[in-house]
Figure 1 (cartoon, each protein chain N blue to C red):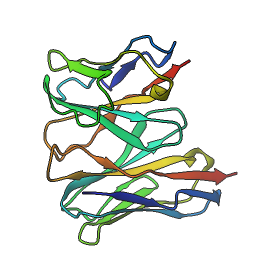
Figure 2: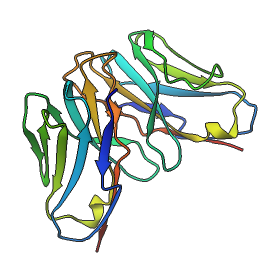
Figure 3: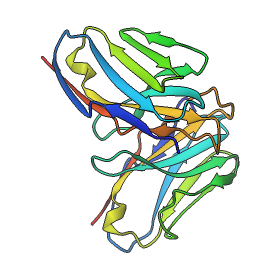
Length: 114
Length: 113
């Protein structure tokens, strides 16, 4: 597609429920990144995909968080048994594999756990 | 470990002023540096990307410079407008590890009409 698409744009869920966040990167971008931004905070790296594999998942905060990418395209970030501290904006970015290219971000998913 | 710092954290200026936002980084081993703009509750919009071999990039009223050896970049905004009000973030792409960008915490800019 023309840009990075994230869905849903907003999600309100009850504590303890599972949620899935979706990212559809720019066509042909092999690298995909998930970040989290809590209210008033900076960007927190979660996970990096190159193709379908995740060479860096060092930022996932707990085993309740997982992510996958299929067909070298769409990625899903899953949060199980959501907690209030998971409330944040989840941002996805994609990039061409070559390091001279920069990131293109999606508009994010605002997750609120009540 | 690469660290990126942005000063000031917040800035308020009257419309029409020229202003400079600062970004510093601790490790000069970078491929490039990218400046972003973030409006409240929104994603990040790329403004300028400077490769390590470049000294500056320009887009409209924006000019970004890079001094890799001293670990500094500046974003210059000419003739500021209320529509420029946003948070501005810089990020560097290191030449080691998995090459993911390292972000500063941003400068929150408010341009007063």
